Each structure stands twice: as structure tokens, then as C-alpha cells.
Length: 146
Image (cartoon, rainbow, N blue to C red; front, side):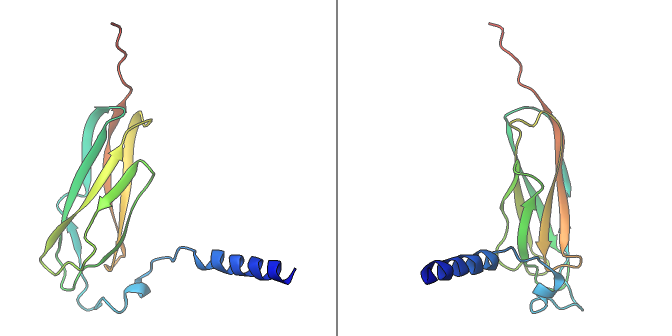
């Protein structure tokens, strides 16, 4: 019985220790100089892919430059739903004046209608979150009558 209680306690402790940590400006206090913060500047913050047939996957590179005075560190990139997935972004600090990109994939399977998806980039900027958007129209596949 004592072993069961110890096991339950250990599992409970483990479960609570695996929670997601909220990203706040305080997390970056050791890598950001508030006098000279990094600034993430996108060439375009919105991409309209037009009209596509359902089932097609769209990928888009959103190019950006660190136009601030300090090194830019991206901590997370998150899509607004499971159909919009960021796959590539820099995992190293981007120096002032340097450029990089965030690559986003949109899977239109089962998404007929208007698509308006947001990707949030969390970094050591002020404010900490920057949003980019991918949008367009998804139409159902045409039926083959042959």
C-alpha cells in the first residue's frame, strides 16, 4: 500500500512539473537590453494565397530583418490551428541588421471556405508577440463526371 501511495505521489508530481511555462518579458531579462531592444520587421506580415482547391498545401516564407539594436531571439512560433504549422525559423540569435525567415505551411484539407490563419512569433521584443497572417479562399474539389 505504501508503494502505491509513493507511486501516485511521484506521478502527480511529474504531471504538474510538465506544464507549459508562459512566456513573459521577464523570461528574456538576461538577453535583452531594454535600452536597445531588438525589433522584428517583416517584409510582409500578411500573405493572401488567393483561391485554391481543397487538399492543396501552401507554404510561405515570411522574411524579416532585425531592425533593432540588440540580438533577436525567437523563443516560439505557433499557428492558430492544426492546419497552420510553422516549420522553420532561426533557433540562434539574429544580430541587428541581419535577416532570416519564418516558414509557414497551411494544409487546406477539410478547410473549404474563407481561411484567415494567424501565426504568433514570441521573441525578446517589446511587445513579446508579433503576428503574421495567411489567408485566402479554399473551394471544394470539382467532381469528375467521366
